[in-house]
Length: 407
Image (tube, rainbow, N blue to C red; front, top):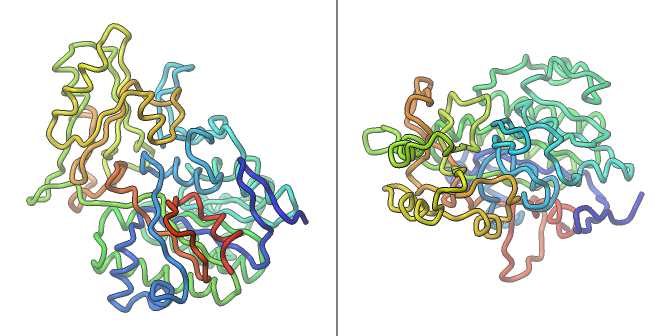
């Protein structure tokens, strides 16, 4: 085994304990503190009280699932790995597509590099949309809760997952989709003792429930029990999130939405002006494809600076940047974002046209993410760590924390 592995310019030491990195989708720090204060997460409470190490870290912007999970497993921002949303406009093809195909990856992962060096690596994610990206070039176990019944040795490195876990395949819109991951992870650590595991959950609960509510606390009670078991089995556990989550509605519970394509259509009457919402994925029931980050593509004849100023004046808009400035500030691939990047305020989301968003599935007031207000996330480890004073921590420092710094 190599003593150190270098991936994307960062060096990682070989693990002397199994390492489990957990991405809790939509988990802002307040979920952990609220569950701890309520007494439903005693293990996390001990870690937060000093038995472990916890810092507040920044996720990448846009604060969405795909770019942040890929940053965590590559150790670098989207400008390097190439995945800058769940959905984007593929200029080469001239079409809007899901960004879940490995062909969009521009670099390898820490997971694949360690597997190539001889480590036993296991990846379990909630939704199958993310599995192929996380499993890019990986020789190991990689499957999703959503498609656990379809896992095969040839495709996923494992079969008979339902027998292992002792649960049926959960609904994609359920807390059980995440619970399945933790049960599977604990069973595999007990049975196979992988060197590295990466577990990535779904934010179904966080979209529905604020920190400290009964539904949220039930979720973190479940999470606490399984993280404690991973610790008991001797793993170094690093827990972080892909993004936070906030309420995006008014006092009456109605969504605060800027329908940006409707607005631009009214202003410009130009069918070549295109708004892209990178939050879009196949699972929109709990957010209606409404998030706090949008891209605007413009024909060459339009004045981007003038339009930028007009959009910035809209109620609920926090920031509008031209392509180059957004790529530099947020470390994004400039060729995969729009002429303008638009970010809304904490309580507001951005839509396209009103008629294109089906909000009938929202059975509670809208909670969502994508903007600067959802950038801060926890970075928690079950070991003591000597921290560098003044360092800006990122969620994609998780593997460095677990492999290089945890004692």
